[in-house]
Length: 311
Picture (cartoon, rainbow, N blue to C red):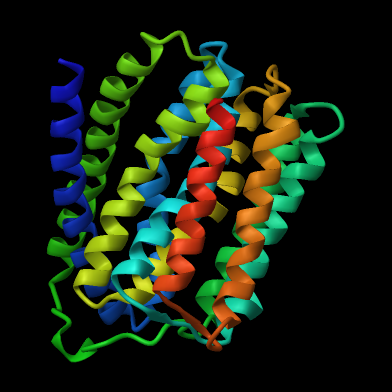
């Protein structure tokens, strides 16, 4: 039965990713907003919804390590696994606004989280308010000033849609991604718990992988359809949303107290490290480009993280 949930979940995620991408492209055309902004807002929020639901429910049910580990693990998975697979499939040419705005905001959010929990192991409600407030400032800046950060291919074949269809595809795609993640998590956690694994390890590996599947589905579909701006924007935006929205809102509802020291001594440093190395990879060996070699580096980093966390 757990295997069936996994298969059904993956099917819903692929369909949802396709619908969400269709709506996002049409929305960027209708509003004349750069696609990376749509990727970092609309698509990121929809694909981060599973993390938000899982983290709030976990914190309220008395499993704070799942709430925190889910976000930290998801951010590692988004960059190590999802971005790694995406750029192995297709190169992404990056514009200057990536290192001027998008990457710095992701790093600031990551460092803020580290600063809030490193010393006392608690993400307090007022700290959640600070995180969420930073997101509002970032979104205002994005909508007013952000330029394109990725060069797209074949943009002339973009399809314009009436507003009601955009809303319909957004709603159906978001629900499909959420439902698919729920089924996938149910099956994956069901299999993992049978081995007696700790909450933290389940969170940073199995649950985070499950909640990152929407990003993987949306990003791969985006790359296959030559919408690379949405692909990269979705991943950077999802990491920003995971910290500022998921942990921000969750801690505003109930403070998150870290119980497993491994989150503070191991996992968060992996998140900071893999977030940082994306920048030099953009410049090396060819400037402002992410290619298959960079993808292999990210994938190997993710595999190392999973291996060293489980053993």
